[in-house]
Length: 167
Image (cartoon, rainbow, N blue to C red; front, side, top):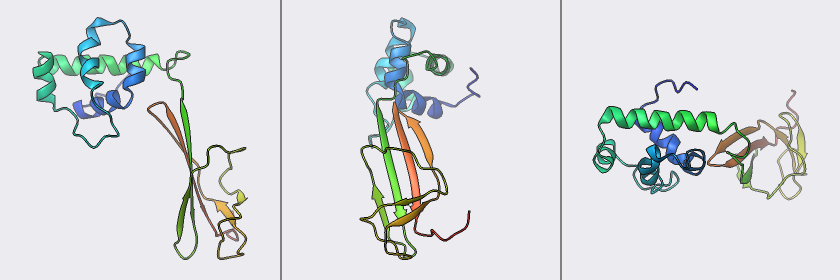
């Protein structure tokens, strides 16, 4: 799979973000062991700085080109490996419903699950949120977006109270 010549930072972010899946796919391949060990020390969601290239070069005893080649190989194997069954299980689903009204009040609701996934343009009722048009908690789905990262599926559903707007 082509990686479009990702640079050091792009490769590092991708490998750290998906370190669990990368480790699973590259399990037993000694060539990547030291670099896997180093990137496993970092969490993409922490506010700690990511390792500088010069620090990784020193720790691993590699030249710059060798490090980039190694990282690109790891990234390519990750990209081709995730399509094999079981290599990239989605372990968590997070749903975010972002509601707003014409007075620019905002709410974010994160239900544990939904019985159905609404489509753009659907009108939905959330009785405990009152809107300004009808006062009855009626909202219109503006968008539905999906993000899959770090074995987590995030569904974001922006809604607003402009239910009279035509489709």
